[in-house]
Image (cartoon, rainbow, N blue to C red):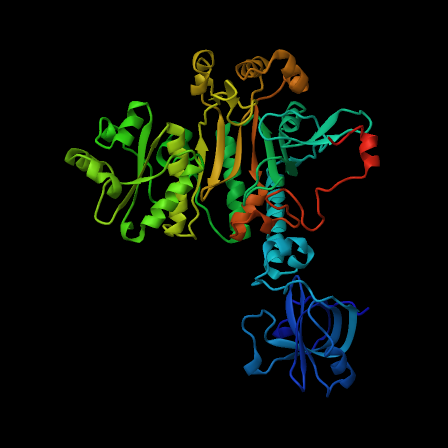
Length: 578
């Protein structure tokens, strides 16, 4: 085989005159009668080769049979393209390879879609033939960016004395959050391992073991409903530290994020990052991952509608609900009745009954109410006022999500802007009406704020956690907390969550025991690596940044997983399918 001397993306004018061998795939072949032009592609780029009968009639005839995705090796001398034929859109566009030798390394069948960036093939077809889809330069560039980002992470954390330590993939099921993926044991029939949702317990044990700065770029698994930015198996940058407080963690992690954006995307981020308390984020944006590039904020108009002539909202206030509004400045003329109906349907998925526009309800309002709203909401000519009235959580969830939906629809912000902030002071727990018990907002190992320890006895839902999320353009890229390192406090939290002593020992006994052997103060964070790469690459589909992703039904169209297994395998595991 002719072995390559150069890649298809590196040849430039300075290389003219060199004897060159290229290996790659046929990107395109064009027979111009007297000459055959073949573009050869590898992951580094594309080079044009020329088959000229004056140089070799035999090679010319062989080249005429080439078709897209054939694997070839071409040997020849690099020459300058004539001035009129220089392709300024190709890095190699000043040169071309005059073929003097050629090998067909493998013939390709006609592919099910054209392997080009602007393909119109469906995502389902591309996922079925993912190995072909991955030949497209766009996806190859994203995976190269992913590699670069991982390299930056490892370099930065290593310079800050973090050690990368691997933790088990087959572990114990400790369900508290999303559902586990379970793996049956052949040796211990009827018992199961779980695939880790995160290495949370192991990284805390590493702190007890004295590894004061740990990290891992690690695969995690959660059996949850999927969406554009979720996968059943995903990658975390998992980090834990000892003897550091929140301020120390903010400082080190801001440095990591800044280095990622600078070296992977060429963007300088300003430090320190803004901080926003959870309560304020919910009040102003209806979300704990606010996209502050969108200029409209949620405003409470509950007082205006107390005893109002608009009975629907007056009834909400009377029953203890709230009314909130957003003022979409100077866009009323761009919002049709059809758009309002669509907005009403959109918010129903968040539990709201619908959306009201001020224009639609003002006939029910008194002059005083109109004046109060005008002042409170800063209403000017052509402003669009949208309101939702319901229970507190429903209003914040629905109007907050609608704000983002309409912000994107109206292109109300600069896509090039990077809005990054810490959201802090999360509630430690919240009461679940369905379960009739308190539930951890993050996980049960999160430390309560020392200032709120007394609230655990009286109003635990009001206690704040030493927890924090980092948010970029409305997407949570990481979250963490200071952990509980005292067994008594950990047991107190389990009691509040109605995890019995017996159940706590069964599920977390090894951790509780470890806390009695000199556990240091510790805390950490986990970044969603896939989401970070999405943001760096400027894509909104998480499948673009994963080599072999799953669909939204958690299946692989290429391998047809999940699939049936042989009955013999099930028998060995002691499992029957009902």
